[in-house]
Image (cartoon, rainbow, N blue to C red):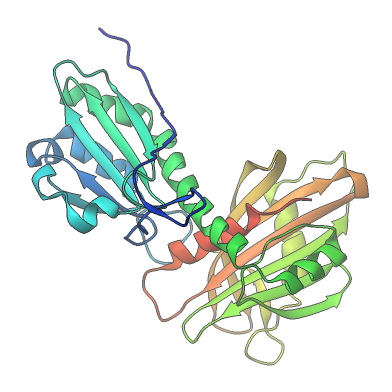
Length: 327
C-alpha cells in the first residue's frame, strides 16, 4: 500500500488585484461567518464515507457551552455550483478523487479573497481519504480553529484600546491587546482588574489577577479554581450579596497550551452567581511568572441568556485576546 503523506502548503497566492500605487496588492474581502465552512464535493463523494467522516470531525460539539453547538458550521455545494460569492468564502474545503492523486491535504491562503483558507483534500480512493481524515482529525480541527482565532486576534490588533492596554501593563506588567468597546469595570485591589464588553444581549468579561506562589509548585485544576473563586467573588451579581463563582455541576477541565513560547494552564468550565440565577461558560489561562514569583491568570467569561446559539463564537473571540499577550 502506498504511504499516505500529509502535504501542507502554506501559500499566499499573488493574483491580480487592486493596487494603491505603492505596489501593494489588495484582495476582495472574504464572505461568510466565523467558523462556517463551504465544502465543495460531488454528491457521490459527500454522501459517502468521506463526507460522513468530515462531518463527524467538524460537527463535534464545541466544549463547555450551555447549549450544544458544533465546532464548525458546514455548507455543502457541488463543483458545478461553486462560483460567485462562494469562491470568496473565508473557509473552503475541496474534495477530489483522481486515479493518480496522492493522499493528503494541500493548504492555501487568500486565493480568491482575504482573509481566506482553502484546504484541498485528495486521494485516489474515497475509503483511503476517509481513513486519512479520521487519523488527522485533530490536526484538521487545529488548523481551522487556529486560523479563525488568529483572525479575531488580528482585528483586535487593528482596533486596540490603548488606554486599557496601558492600564494592564502598569498593573500587571503584561502587554495585552484589548479591542475597542471593552470598558474598565473594577480594579479595587492592586492585583485584580475586571473589564467587559456589554451589549443589550451579551456580556463578555475579562478578569486579570495575580498572586504570589512558590514557583516550583505545580498547579492543578482544583488549585486554580480555588484562586478563581477568591477573585471572581469581587464581581458583584444583580442582587445584594450575590457574586460570581465557579459552577460545580459540571467539573472544569484543564489542559496545557503554549502561547508565544510560554506554557499556560487552560481551564474551561461554567460560572454561576452565588445568590442569584445567572451563568455561562468561561475559559481561563494561568501561567507561572518565575521572575516575579507569582501566578498570573487571564479569565474570560460570556453571558448570553437570550441566545440559544452563538456562545461558541463569543468565547472564541475572547480566546483570541490571549493570543496577543506577552508577559
